[in-house]
Length: 377
Image 1: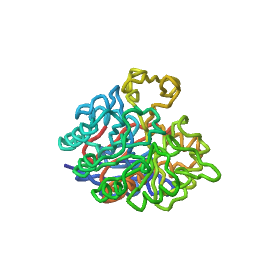
Image 2: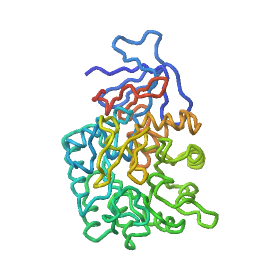
Image 3: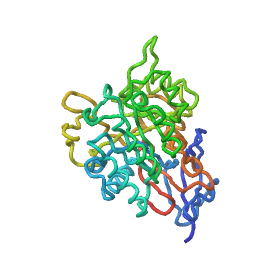
Image 4: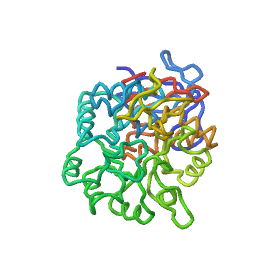
């Protein structure tokens, strides 16, 4: 197969460097072969795009295309969510399964494992958000299904053979649980948590590597109780996802987090089934959720995920939060790749990297993607 050529009028390479103009990207055998100055007359068959970036990576997406992963933890559902995420420019995602009754999360593991075995492109692994959370910070999760880890849970999680990100409340878990999970290769994040700064430090010592949706489902910082928010922003190694939809986090707090964590903050969508879908309401495990003016809420006004694409999140960081475009792109690509442990293959437009690319127009709206060099959308 002859190499694929992409002529980008503007290229953001994911390093955080200012953009380069008129770049020619050559793809062969699923990887980027070269990135060079484009000739005045690019070769025939070259694809022309306005803006090219590394493929966006969404580590927290619950649904899309009128499908909620919790409602249908199947291979078909995973494919639908992946396809919906691409409309926002995501080339790799972690389908996210939130708190549910009993051991329903086992079905999510099986579905993602089977989808990857089938060769469905764009599945970087699985995100389990719960049920091992804090009952004091359930958010929209069904509080009655929240519980601590048990030995049987740990044994099952240690057997997972796909990349796994697990969100839990560290203060609620038995001693040594995080150490066991980290030793098994699980990426452990804290979320829906009331952990103190000291408890976060102890969890990091055991293997905690990140925080889920910073500022949300956690106590606000106080003068004598900095808590999980301030400890995350001041910690030297912790990564954190953040939902930049204009509802979950005020733009000033988006800007603060971006300034405090320039190498550790990444964008997630927390998208629900309404994204890239046609139906503006749904039932979330017994709780009615409605989309109105871009906001998803339950009956009491609790935020219930987001109606958001990765391109929307990048646009919010550039426009509302006022951070440079190259920093926003990095938050959607290179930093989540590092957080997931796949930065040697994903997150940059550079020779040797897997050819995952996102294309956008000048308004930062996604216009297409290439996934692993062979799948063009």
